[in-house]
Length: 425
Image (cartoon, rainbow, N blue to C red; front, top):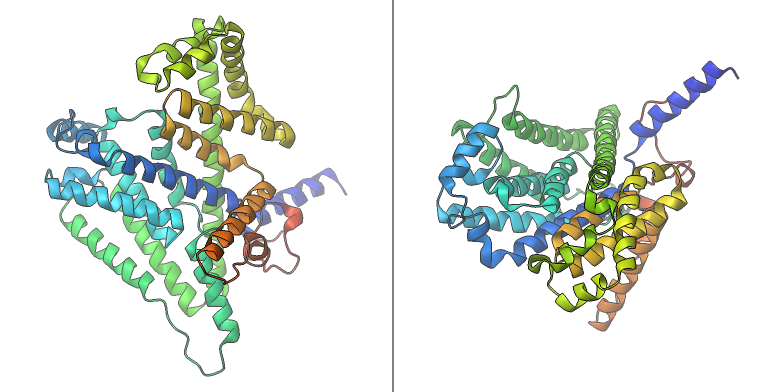
C-alpha cells in the first residue's frame, strides 16, 4: 500500500471515529458530575452569605453591575430586575439545576439552565470569583455542547428502561409517550419568548445570546421530533452525526483548556523570583487568609527541604503535564500527583471549591478502565446501603450496563455489531 493510500485510510478512519460515536462518555459524565457538584456545594455553603456575594447587599451594587455589563455585554438574568424576590428565584433555580444536572435528569435542558445559573451569578459580581470560578464559568458553557448524560445518569436509565419495555411490548399495544420532556421544552420556550419580546436577552437573531438560546431550543425540538417520527431512519442518523461532531469538538476543547490552564500557570511561575529560588510555597502558608489550620501550615513550612520540593515539584508537574499526554503511564502518574496536590490545597490553604473545580477538570484525562471500576465500586456501595435499608432488589452494576448500553472511548472495546451512523471511508 502506498503512503498516499495509508494516509487516506488513516484520515477515513479518523472521520468515521469522530462521527460514529460520542467519544469519552465516562469522561464527560464525570465532568458533569464534578462541576455540578462543585457549584452546588458552593451555592449551599454560601447560602447564608448569598446577598453579600451576588445580591442587593453586596459591595458591587446593582447600578455598578449594570454599568459594567453595558460595556462588556456579559449575560446575567440578575440584571433583569433589582428585586430581592427575583434574586431568590434565580439563586434557587441555580441550586435546582445543579442538583438535577448532577443526577443526569434531562441533561440537555439542565445543562443550559446550569450555564444560565453560573453566568448569571458570576457575572453579577465578577470581582468576587477566583481561579476555580473561572474554570466553572468556562466548563458550564462547554457542557452544553456535550452529550454528558450517556452514562451514570437518570437519562441513561430512562432510555434503558424504555428500550426494555419496547422489547417486551406485545403487538398492538400502545407505547407510553414521554410527556415531561415536551412540557419542559414548552415551558422554557415560553420563558424564552417572553424574555425575547421584553428585550431582556442581549444580541439579535443573527448573533449574541439570543441566537444561542433560540438555536438550542429549536435544535432540541427538532431532535425530539425526528426521534419520534423516524427513530431508526436516516434523519436520526444525520442528527447523531452532527451531535457526535459537536460533542467530540467540545470534549477536545475541554482537554485543551485544561492543558492551557496548567501550562500557562507553570510558565508564569517560572518567571517569578520566589518560584525560582524555591520559597514561593512558604509565604501563603503564613497568611491568615490561607491558614485555616495554622498548626498544619507551620508543620509543612518548618522543613526547608519540603518547601523546596513542593515549590519545584509544582512547577515541573504543571509545565510537563501537557507533554505527558502522549504517554499514558506518565500521564496517569502526574494525574495522581496533581489531584493529590489539589486535595492538599483544599485542606491546608482552605480552598475546597477551587480544588474541586481543578480535580473535576483533571478528570477528563482519567482512563476509561478506571472510571468503569469506579462506577462498579459505587454501584456495589449503593447496593449495600439499599440492602441495609431493607431493599432487597439487586441493582446491576455499571459494568454490566456499560457493556450493553454505553459506547466506549477505546477502539478495541467497540462491539463489532454496533450500528454505525458516521461517515464511513
